[in-house]
Image 1 (cartoon, rainbow, N blue to C red):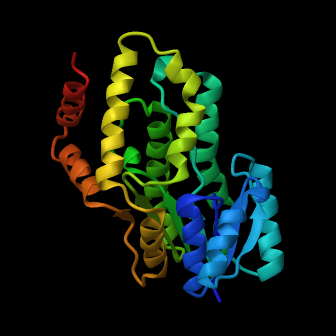
Image 2: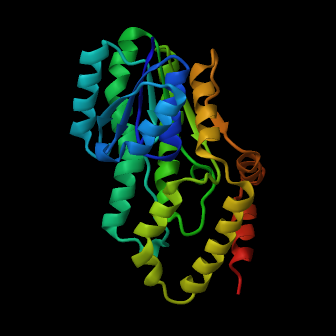
Length: 280
């Protein structure tokens, strides 16, 4: 059975990806920063008849990544699939984003992906095969107001994965990025919680613009939000595909938004559309 390691499995997309990969015939190492929060994962896995190997992993700690991988290789002798899913967000403009906030977002969203990928590549290269899938976002394709740090981290992931993919392909390693739009998970509530101080600190004109953003985001999640299980199935299908695509948008609105950006090399169309939304 192929061996898969999934990061960020305590809730949401990571949780369901781990369960569905197990159902698809993988030995799944489901990781999370705090293993005391595995209750929901175990409940869903039990209901699905899936067995998981749950291990602690803080992707912001490069040494922890290396140690986790050593343990996986010792247990299974191989690693065939890496799903970089763990992520963090922050609702704030540049003026409300502290250096500490920015570095934390980059540590989890970018350096976590970089270091986990760097750790597994030698094993996959030696085996002549492997799959690495990084969960990006529509925010990795098109900048989103009040998501400055988050989008910067996801743009970095997209650039890294796209740069390394041709080299990896010649080693038998297939790289892919998955770009969801709105997904109804605990991630949104977590971002709102960690963003309370930044939002409270917003003075004009940011204060009324962030209110407008929150209103529109709520409508987007209500009308177009996917379930984490839907996104997880797309990831698993991609993982199991004989000839996987490099880039997969999980919803039509992601492709439509990116198409608008791609059709205008000046970048004016997307920026001016957003600007109109926040015009007084």
